Amino acid sequence: MKIPFVDLHAQYLSIQKEIDSAISAVMRDSAFIGGSGNKYVRAFEESFASFSGFKQCIGCANGTDSLEILLKAYGIGAGDEVIVPSLTWMSTSEAVGNMGAIPVFVDVHPTYYTIDVALIESKITPRTKAIIPVHLYGLPAEMDEIMTIAKRHDLVVIEDCAQSHAAVYRGRKIGTIGHAASFSFYPGKNLGAYGDAGAIATNDEEIALKCRMIANHGQKEKHNHLMEGRNSRLDGLHAAVLSAKLPFLDRWTSQRIERATLYTNYFLKSGIGLPGKPDYSKHVYHLFVVQVQNRAHIQSQLTDSGIESAVHYPTPLPLLQAYADRKFSESDFPVSSKACSRILSLPMYPELTEDNIQKICKVVCSANESVPS
Ligand SMILES: Cc1ncc(COP(=O)(O)O)c(C=O)c1O
Image 1 (tube, rainbow, N blue to C red):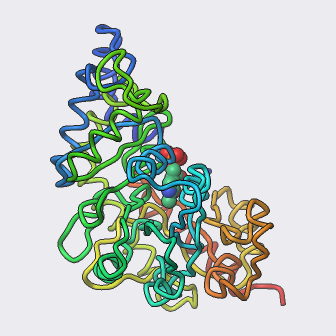
Image 2 (tube, helix red, strand yellow):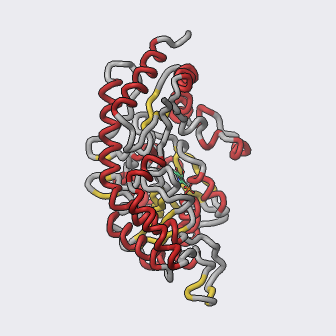
Image 3 (cartoon, rainbow, N blue to C red):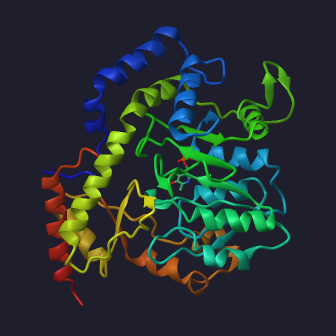
């Protein structure tokens, strides 16, 4: 039997009644296009804001757009610099570049993989306008230190929460600590739509209003375009699916944490590098990422056993071809570079059974012991 990396069909079957009736309602009302006139979009924005504890939530087309829209709303553009971690998904730095600004990469913490706060200040220049910490794999970045640095240098902090719905940092839900936050609801995320979707969150009414306009062609109301914006609305179908799923998010998060504990217990004496987390953070395990010595061998053994695995991510962002003109080398980002050659993401989702976790651990441990030298 195969063990998939993520099992969206199993999740659908577990809440089929709720999903089918949410989709039927949108079909009945033909409420397809988003914007504040769509009751399904508005209902999701309100319930996600109240679940997460921010005043304003604006649905948009995807997580990448939510970062770009926020950067534009804060007036960040050509010549400005924005600090981002060197280990994350491309969207974090791509959004900065797409706005004409320059992503300034900072290496990550060796245990937590989130931006290394001790290195941030050395990268700040008079052109620095913002920091985008990423709560990578579901673990909150060190937000207290980040906010202190931001205050000292008058910088905007946009939390990239794409991988961390419902994670908690020192008693506060992520997304409520910075000036604003960006969410992705890509299908495999901890809260996922059935296609691309995203949201912006903030307590700042003015920024919220700007984001709402930018995401809908710069319109304040129909045909009153105060600026050039873009088409980045959350669709009614996605909003209805997200509203149907939101009540399950706390349960799914607990199930992810239980599965992470099972993995940890099985691997305890195996020599496999386990994900670390500070006591004061709630890690929501969007991904369960271990460190291994011979990843290629372990991955091929997993594949032979019908078990899917993945690597998030094989290359630090600054070393990708996209940034070749900046002439970075591995020694500029030693922690990310080392991590990228060893990290391995194992299957992680609420429906993953203990039996299957045991099977995965057995294959990883025996492959780890039989590593060809
Ligand atoms: C850290 C991070 N930021 C941003 C995004 C962008 O989200 P989307 O795929 O919805 O554009 C993702 C999605 O994978 C992500 O993992």
